Amino acid sequence: MHIEAGIEKLHYESYLAIKLIERLLIKNNINRVLRIAYDFDCDDGGYYYPLMKTDTIFVNPDNCYNLRQYNNDDARPENMFYPGYVCDYTIYGTILHEFSHFLCFQVYKNIIDDYKKEFPNKRLYLNSYSNAEIDEEIANTITLYISNPYLLKLISEKHFKFFKSFFKTPRPISSNNCFLIYQKFPIHVKNELKTKWGIIYNFQNKQFEKIEIENSTMEKNEV
Image 1 (cartoon, rainbow, N blue to C red):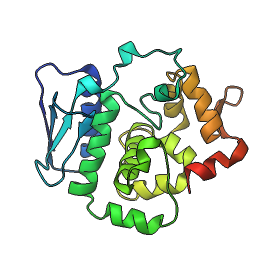
Image 2: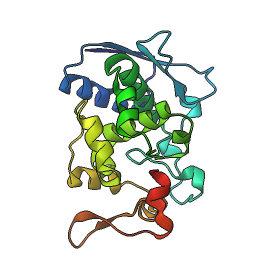
Image 3: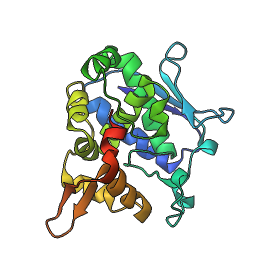
């Protein structure tokens, strides 16, 4: 296992993502060279091309959100993201997302076909980017499995078990670990977790709970 960061001044969030990826590679005995580079000419937050430079993930920090500039009071739809949530537009989340593509195309090469067989008629729309194509849906789900596995388990245990059958997540699969991440969520993200996914934290019982939500929101997100 070897990770090279071709970056002179590494963003702190990039560092956190790299350390988490390192833990995943070690935990799963994956011996691969992985390179992470900044591309300031990229129009998106990042990209991974499986047919060229297959060992390199590219990220453009200028097109990613910086948590130090995050407005906790901004409840607009485009601000419904955070590390460890179903949607993460930070450098941290972008690196994990592109790494998820790397896993699919270079390490677990049958995972996409197996996913289609396992969920032929169900789509898990964790965020709007999942609508693009099945590869993005899988990458989004793997990103959550890596960053906050217990939350994925709460949203869809079937999807959680599917990815667990391929590799181990580097984070603890526990309610306590999920709560540590949940505590950092802005209030509007916590509210969306409740209204969109039917997940709340019961402080009295000190555990997450699933509740009924109106208009069959879960059916719209997992169809």
